[in-house]
Length: 271
Length: 112
Image (cartoon, rainbow over all chains, first blue to last red):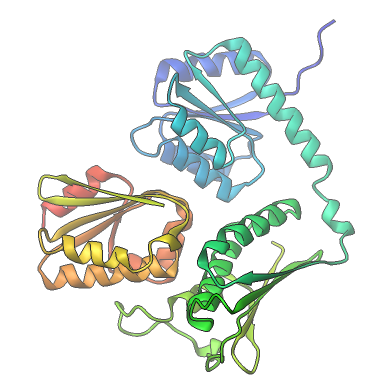
C-alpha cells in the first residue's frame, strides 16, 4: 500500500524552458497545481497575486537570481517553503540560500524521485508548523530584558533573538522591526553611550497577543526629545542626519521617548 | 559584511555582501571618497546585501552629492523589495538612479 501524498500549489521558476516543462509536467501528474515562470521579476508578481504552498526556484537566472527570489518571497510570506535548484558543486550559494530561509536544495540534473521526496518533506514540515501557528493566541505576555555591553557587535545577538521570537509569535513585518531595533541600538551605543565599554544598553522586548514593544535605554545624558509628529527629513535632500529616527518612526506604529531622552520605546502591532 | 571593488570600462563597481553593516563604520565613506578621485562614475551594488541602515544610506547620499559636484554620477543596484522600500521612505529613489541589473546601471552611466 502506498502512503497518500500531500498536494498543493507550487510556483516553479527557471530560465531553462526544458526544465520548466519537465517539472511542470511531473508536478501536475502528481496532482499539484503549478504556475511556471521563466524570469524572477514576473515570478514575484505572480507570487503576490496568487496563493502558493511551495516555491521551486533556479539559482542562476539573468534578472533576479535565486537569492533575490528567496529574499523577496520571504518578505511577503516568511513561512513558505522554498526549494532551490542549483548546479552540482555550487555549495556557497546553497549555504547562502539556506541561511536566507530556503527549505532545501536539489542539484541539476533533477532526479524526479528526489523532487517528490523533498516536496513531501516540505509539505509535512509546513503542516506541522501550521498546527502551532495560532499558539500565540494563548500568550498573556513574554518579557525579555538584556543588559548588553556598549558594542555594536552585540547587535547581531539581539537581532537573532528578536528575529527568532518574531517568527515564533507569527509576526510578518519582521524586517521593519529589525531595522528599527538596528537604528535604536546603534544610536544608543554610538551616540548615547559613546561606545564606552563601562556603559550598558538595556533592551526590553515584550510580546503580547497584539503587539511587540521594544525599549532601548542607554546610560548617557540623554538627548532633546524630537517632536515626532512634525518630524520630517531635512529639506536638504542630501543631508545625512535624522534618517535613523525617521526610519523608526516610519516603520513602527508608535514611538515614545522618556523625559531624559535616553530611552526609546517602539511598538509594532500585529498585522 | 564584505566589500569588493572592480572596474568595468571607466565605471568603478562596489559589490557589497552580507548583513553585518555596522562593521564598516566610517571607513566606507573614505574608501568611496578616495575612489572618486580616480573616476566619477560609481555603481553601488547592493544585490548581496540582506539589509540596509541609515548609516549606509547617509554614505550613499553623500557620495552622490560628491560625484554630482564632479560632474559624475552614482547608480545603486538592488533587487530586494525591502531595500527599495527603505530608499522610497527616505526619498532617496528621487535623487539616485536605482536599477535591478548591472547592465542597466552601466548603460545609464554610459549616457552621462
